[in-house]
Amino acid sequence: MISKLKTECGCQFTCKLEGMFKDMSISNSVNEKFRDVTKDMPPLSLDLNVRVLTTGYWPGSPCKVASKLPKEAEIAFERFKTFYLKDHSGRQLNLQPQLGQADLNAIFYQSKDDVVTPKRHILQVSTYQMCILMLFNRQQTFTYQEMQTESNIPEKELKRALSSLALGRLQHRVIQKEPKSKEIAATDEFSVNDQFSSKLIRVKIQTAIATKSESDPERQATRQRVDDDRKHEIEAAIVRIMKARKEQEHNVLISEVTGLLKSRFMPSPASIKKRIESLIEREYLVRSPSDRKVYMYLA
Image 1 (tube, one colour):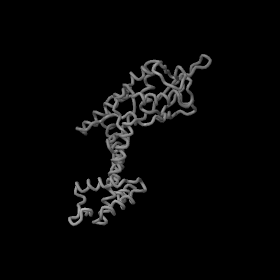
Image 2 (cartoon, rainbow, N blue to C red):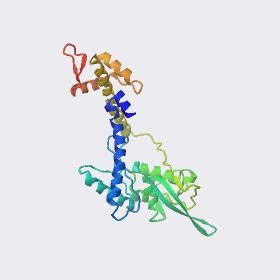
Image 3 (tube, helix red, strand yellow):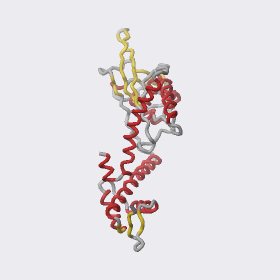
Image 4 (cartoon, rainbow, N blue to C red):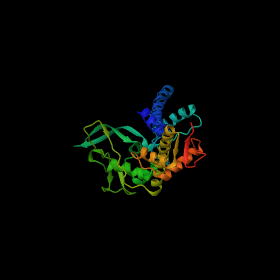
């Protein structure tokens, strides 16, 4: 499928997709090597699986705030980081907790008729939810402000994670909140809901969908990423047409590029002209000596 897209749209259109598949393949081999290299070291208290993603290939913005991981996860990540940078000196490896997931072994001590019965579940949660839940291994109750201080999770992400854990579906409320309101305040208190019950051993806790609209800087950053992606598509279309035609008049080229791309998006003549100028600067195209409005393809 990628080969067909590459043939139809050009290599610039598929380079990021190819990079994603390459990242996933390399990550599998890196994890296998990590387990082989560290098998003689003191065992970790958790199973670690890392996806090493190349910045620029994947959508979304990197997290700029360094959240505090639980000690067990921090030790595991630092061991992997040391291993990886030993083989890849000069690179940077930054944790992106907003993309991670975790499986937690959880025990809920349900009390009925003065009899305490432990119930075990495996909770499938996001990395931020894991950070929150593992705080309760240290004490029974936290305020929202204390959680934020202990975890250093960005406010928006912390409220999303808590909404799923304490305000989501009744069968997914693994922690309880006081007072019982839908809004989260700095003084609200949270504790483990020992009455949590599910027929399933493995329970997936969904993350609340962010409903807040993008801020102006976020909207501008998104628009910039879209424009950057479209630049490559426009250039690929120009090169494809010129490679077939060898020589083309300006207005006709604009029309053909628009017709080729209109099924995906409608490029403006100004944006196409900018990409033509860029290709001329990089010596993919040249203006005809006899007519400045005619472009010639340089093989």
